Image (cartoon, rainbow, N blue to C red):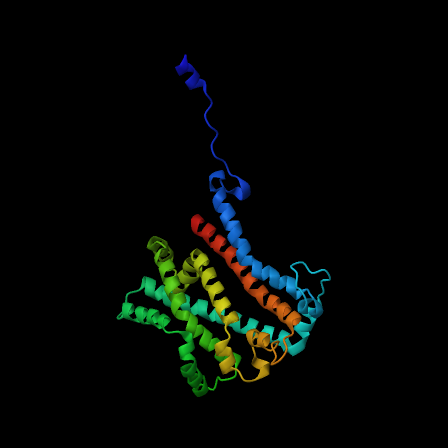
Amino acid sequence: MALALERTKPAAPPVGPGLFGIRRMNRPRLVIAIILALISLGPLLYMISLSFQSNSDLLGQTVLVPSHPTIQNYVQAWTENSFGHYFLNSIFVSVVTVVITVVLASLAAFAFARYTFPLREVIFYIFLASLAIPNILLIIPQYLLLDRLHLLDSLEGLIFLYVSTNLPFMIFLLRGFFQTIPREYEEAFRMEGAGTLRVLVQLIAPLSLPAIALVSMFTFSQAWDEFPVALTMINSPSHDTIQIGLAEFIGAHTVAWGPFFAASVIATVPVVLVYLLSQRWGRSGVSLGGIR
């Protein structure tokens, strides 16, 4: 009798997806993730709140939710101190830096991953060794180099330095990803008459979209947020980048806090957009890689 009851006893329901598609057994992890996200986003949300408060409110007791929000800070931040021009300068420098870095890093990483040539490993590890040198120590040599190349006080000079600074790590990252792509795909492509450039552009690059998106995001963020090199190499206000423009809101005796916070929010938007786009490209690359 007991055996019959045990056989007819319904089985326990499987643990299904819970909140946000996460299984119930992982809910503690979800709670921890939400807490950490709030801690990370707290300063950003507070900065956005301050950017909508007037100067009189900022000089008093600031609150998280402004009682009389205003967009005057954004108007003042964009129109004064040529901040809009600095924004466009940084867009130009960052986008061109990303394009050149991705192209050069992809070519070099493909050569290191697929070809055998003399001193290949030595050259590769020389690239890696350059990562151990802090960038701040290279400012004087970089200044002298740009002076010899007549690229001082120019956006092209900044692009040259940013590309050279980002290349070693990006080559390292892409080389490791290229090595995970089966050689059978490349051999099948070459049997159809494809050359090296076509293999890289039509096969390796689509399958490597997650890595290329990651490289693009890192490169854009570093070029966009860089301050010491731009401050040292640029002398003309017409060539200033957005980080130098942010520093102009801080005077010797006073600080325009409202426009400063508004300008900081504006400076954050492109980095967030690039991050979101890189996530989309990364998922597209994973899907394409699975299909192929």
